[in-house]
Every structure is written in C-alpha cells, then in structure tokens.
Amino acid sequence: MRLSTATLLTVAGLIAPEMALAAETAPDLAVSPSEVSDSAIAPEAQATPEFTGNTASMQIASDLAVRATNIEIVGASQELSNIAAQTIRTRIGGDTSQGQLQQDAEILRSTGLFESVEVTSFTNDNGVDVVFQVQPATLKAVQLNNAEVLTPQVANQIFAAQLGQTLSPSQIQTGIEQVNQWYQDNGYILGQVVDARTLPGGVLNVEVAEGVVNSVNLRFYNRDGESIEGRTDKDYVREALSLEPGQIFQVNTARDDLRSLYQTGLFAKADVDIQGDPSNLDITYELTETGSRGIDAGGGFSDSAGLFGSIRYNDKNLGGMNHQLGLDVQVGTRDLQFNANYGRAYRMSHPDRVGYNVSAYRQSTESATFNDVTLSNGDRPREGQIGGGVSVSQPLGDWNASVGAGYTRHSIRDSEGNLAAVDQNGNPLSFSDTGVDDLVTVEASVSRDLRDNPANPTAGSKLQFSTEQTVPVGNGSILMNRVRADYTQYIPTNVFQQDSPEVLAFNVQGGTAIGDLPPYQAFTIGGSNSVRGYGSGDVASGRSFVLASAEYRVPLFNSPVSGVLFADFGTDLGSGSTVPGEPGTAQGKPGTGFGYGTGVRVDSPLGVIRADFGLNDRGDSQFHFGLGHRF
Image 1 (cartoon, helix red, strand yellow):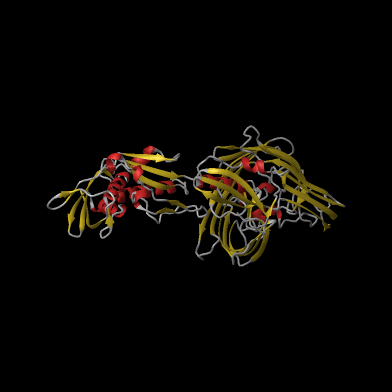
Image 2: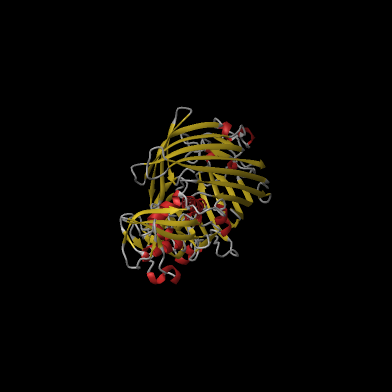
C-alpha cells in the first residue's frame, strides 16, 4: 500500500510521497486534495478588501482580473513560506482577483499551520504585488485516529520536543517516521501513519492503520502446491491459533502460531498469507500435511524368529485430531513380537484434559551393550523385553512436562530362547543371577521446545531434562536412577546466498546412572544416532556419558535434497569399569571416540531420509541410514 500526497493542502506537507506500507498485497490508498469553494468561505472572508497602492487606495470589483507581479509571505520561516507559496492558487505572472486572494488566505488558514493570515496588495504599472502576513501556529496537542496499540502516551513522547513549539512540517515528518518505526520495533509490521494534518488550534491529527484482522482462514495444499480438502480437522487447527478476527496483526503472534502448528507434528509446511489493507486484513494459514498414515507388510527369515511375517500400521492423525495409533506385529515360527501404542496430544483449548500415551510391547533385539559378546554355546545374546507403560503430559508455562510409569521384564537368551545369565567368560549379562530382571519405573521429564519446525528445524533451540527411577521389586530388586540432559541449538546462516536457509546445528547431551545398574542399562556410545563413523555401541558402554555433535546443513539446488557436514565426539568419562561385568572393557571399546563425515538429507512424504558416511579417529569408516535428522 502506498500513500500519495497530491497536494500540500491535504497533508500540509507532512507525509513524504515515498512512504509505503509493509503489506505488498494491499491496494493503493490515494489522498485527494481538498476543494475549497466560494460558498465555503465565511462571509467576512468574502467582503471586498481594500487594495492599497503606492500613492492611493482603490477598490476593485471582485471579478476584475489583475496580474500578480510579486508575492511575499511575511512572518514565517523559509520552510512554511515555501509551503504557503505552493499551496495558494495565485502565482507570479498569473491573473488573480479579490475572490481568489480571499480564497488563498482561507486555504492557508485551513492548513492549520497558521493562527492568522492577512492579505494585502500594492498596485503598480503592471499589476499588483501581493503580501500575505502570517502568524505561524504552535503545536499544542497530538490527536490519534484509529489507534489501538499505539497509545496517546507513546505518541506524546515521540512528539514531546515539538509540543509548544512553532509548527515545523519537517520535524513532524520525523515524528511520523518514528511512529512508523515504533510499529516495526514492536512487531506490528503493517502498522503505519496513513494521514497526518494540522488542524486549527495547533492540533496535529494523526491517522493510523495498524493491521486489523478481519478474518482468519485455513487452506490445505498437497506437496505439488495444489489446493486440497485436508485430513486435519479445521476446528482442531483453529484451537492451536492465537490470532483472531478483530486483533491487530503482530508478527510474533503469527510466528508463535506457526511454531504451534509445526509442534503438532502434522504439518510439513506452514505459511501465512496476508491479503487486504491494514484496516481490513484477511489472514490465511496455508498448510501442507505430513504423511501421517501408513501401512506395510512383509516377511522373511531370522535366527531368532525363524520364518516370519509382519504387518505394521501407523496413524499420527487419527480422526484428524492428532490422536496417534501404532501397531507393529511380527509372527514367526519361533517367536511373536509386537509393539502397540495409542496416544492423544495435549490441547491448549482443553486445559483440563492431559495428553496421554499408552503402550504395550514384546520384542527381542541384539543389545548394543553386548554387540561383540558370545555365550558359552557360541550364540550372540539377545535382549528380550515384555511390558507396557502409560504417561501423561501437560504444559507448565513455556515448558512441557510429562510423568509416567511402566513395567518391563528383561531377559537375556540365546537363539533357541534359553536363558543366559552370563557370557562365555562368566561375566554377568543381567543384574539377577537368573537372566531375568523386573524393572518397575517411574519417569518424569520437562522440555522447552523453541524450534521453528520440529521435523526440519532451521532456527531455535530445544532443552530437555529427564529422570527414571526404578522401584526395587521383582527379580533383581533393582534400585536405580538414570538422569539425562539434552540441549540443541539451530543457527540459520546464508554463506552460499541461497533462498532456503543454511543451518549450523549443535547438540550436547549427557547422563549418568546412580545406584544399581544392569549391564544392558549402560549408556552406549557409537552408531547412527551417536558418534558416526563407529558401529552401534562400538565406542563405549558406561555408567555415564557425554556426547557432542555439530552439523552444517546446506540445501542443494533449491530441491528437497540437502548436504551435511558433521562431527561427533563421545566419551563414557572413564565409567566403563563401573558397569557390572565391564562389557565395554571386555570388548575392547575405547571409551572415547571421534567421528566426522558428510551426508545427504531428502525431505520426502515419509519425513527426512538420512544417509551419512563417517570416518572415525581409528581410521575406520561406516555408512549410516535413518529417518529424521540426527538431532
């Protein structure tokens, strides 16, 4: 939107023609010059004036045209004199008359720049010399129109140095620019002065348009940019938005809304479109949903399960309300494994309802703690888990808090399903001497997520603390507390001057276990989500750990593909010897490792697909694949 000043009469020279509103999509607003007719002039202003010549006075008829040979503005500064000369209709060398001079005087009075205006003329052989005797007005007050967030106190503070002083349009223009800057500094990016004029009595009338929201709309798109119906319930989306009709548009509010939408995990892309003018805005949130639902089936053969078939179903947006359902079942000739969960996210619109998640599982995997350990029969130990848990979550101010409880029965077995309490060297594999441990746990965590997009962040940070306490009941009677802290920072950069932001990302995390420690509960270091360049768990298995990573992410060719440079460092802080059986020491793990390399990221309907090639400080290399960013 651009403001136009066709004449100084309308705005008294106070708004520069080049001033433009921030909303590029808004239509032009033109300010038209005021028309002053003879009928609008007070009767006393229309009386026949006395024109005084050099030698004698004379009266002329109101319709007699006389050439103006010279015009003087007396009593004003050069700035006001120039404005007055440009405002009046009479010009040197042009014809004037009694009526026109009276209209010129009235026009000057109507600008509000002058408390009084008197006009006289002196005849000469070629016409008349005209003198306007003026008394400049004093700025006595500032009056705001259409202002809601801009208060009179702020306006008076901006114009404080000018109050009580002779009106100066250039100084008032400076004040107007300061008002516009105040809007920008406070996040009201569409707020701006649209008109300013001085009124009789020394009043500066300032009219503003602040960006009033008329409507808030939602529009869904597919990944090709085509408008679609969308799966997410629109009422659910609106509950996540703070911006409402009638509010003044503020960039921080819109930014917070976008972050809230991303944090639901339902949207791969969210933008804000602004249409209209600052007095009547139509806001549209343009949303592209993630691939929230999927199903697949497969089969194969493994030593632990034998011949097996599997089916997996996942829906992260059940009913369009961000309810989550996951089911993964594998049925084999030797084993049955499953993992099921159902959850509902916390909704700010329903503060009395906590978010929750319920899970149940039965699974068998090779433990990273025992990746090079063999049993007395030559088999690799397998860690079996069966159990379940429940957790609830709710925000606490800027933090999200969750608490939960769970039960897991851990067992160490060989490929035939036989229990194995020790390895071939007699080192313990479980805390109890039976190969079976019961862990009853109570967990709590708090996190503060300020990332702009949790799925693919380019700015912001995330901080999380968690603790897990076991209750000493069942096999092993384990009394243990595990604590962890995790911090990530994302810094947008633009070294290669691209449209999409490059990102410098840092992550540091650490943890320790206090009390009893089953060997399989040791912190493992190494692998695709740890120190890349090493295999899973190849760096350390310790009671404590510290892990630090850095990545530089660069979009490639304005495509969904990004390149990554990374470096990782991890250490068990010398705590490997405090783990029962010392599995890290027994397997020759170094305890400290460093890795670096490069990789690619592909933003796909399934999420971010990750592929990395890493080198480590021992001269070995490793390929790593996964879904989602490393951090």
